[in-house]
Image (cartoon, rainbow, N blue to C red; front, side, top):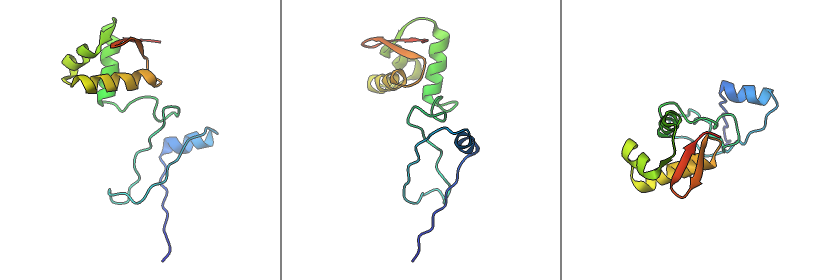
Length: 114
């Protein structure tokens, strides 16, 4: 029996490849979504993963932090977004270590803007 390989690339992936940019592509087994390709996921350095998806929790948190104008902590995030302390801490840590405008000032204290 021969294997069949189907590769579906989005328009922005094709544009990035045409522009000569590099990107990582991970191969996996068949999908459970009817053969449709999963949405591309970057590793933090590509054009695809620079901004979180609109309406997602990270995107809402970035929008809130941008409008806040002063430092905020994990406790502020737990109250505003009704998260556990661990979830808020993980989310802030992930955003601060990525290409986003959130910066860690000290333990539990973050600011928006770079």
